[in-house]
Length: 211
Length: 98
Image 1 (tube, rainbow over the protein chains, first blue to last red):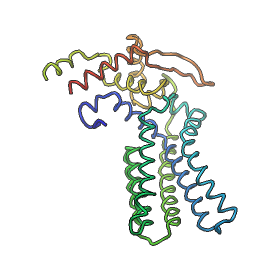
Image 2: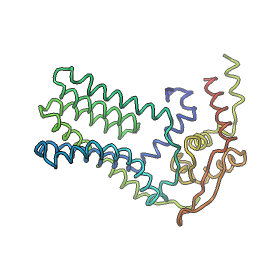
Image 3: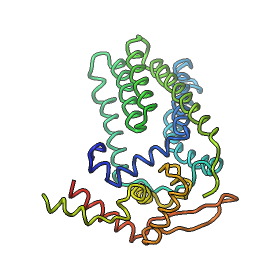
Image 4: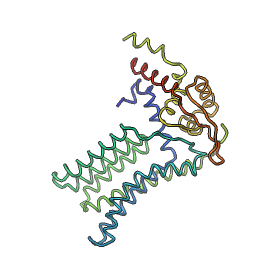
């Protein structure tokens, strides 16, 4: 990957387009709201597995929803964002039709998923206190991913908060599921509030209609 | 080395202008986008953006089509094959020189 701060990087059309599109994508706060809602949903489904008796219908439903519903919601969020923007915000955000995901992006996604699976199922169980490593690692990895994906000050701050929360939860002495509930619940609220503030500020700006 | 740097003189000046480079780079990364999206993404003034779009259209680098989505008027811009080729050429020269 080219260094965006290098002279060639600053003139490379791909780098220029990437920066501009990312800024445009995040300016209305909706992506953060979607991420925050997904975090909160994940936290509530995990918490349901903590409080409901194992083997009960509710427990099975929560586990099934976590396994099936959450991934589809994560992937559906992009579609939902596009729908909301075109239906309600087109005068403010404009219209854009994106290209289908390229091989490079798909490959990167698969590589990240494979690395996560290796860390969770291959490395963490061999360490002493694997629960601590999983919680701390999730916070650090999630925080780094948030900062890298957002590349704006508020995402970097959000990522740092998530990393710190992950480390705090890891050393809090709670069970693995309760730790994930606390981590995702806290991060969901932080992200939702951050996105909500950005969205309110965005929606209060006057609409310019003439070209 | 100097030959590579001298190639900078060959860059397409229509694309090399920073505002137009932003527009062309954005349009290369999407299928199509309307005026408002380009205005929001580039933060150029509407007048300025309009002038640059006209220049790019005159050069045959972009195609502009006016339509409606409900009551909302859309000025949809797309990069043409000619524009994509010019951008690729520009990218090669810049990468080779810097």
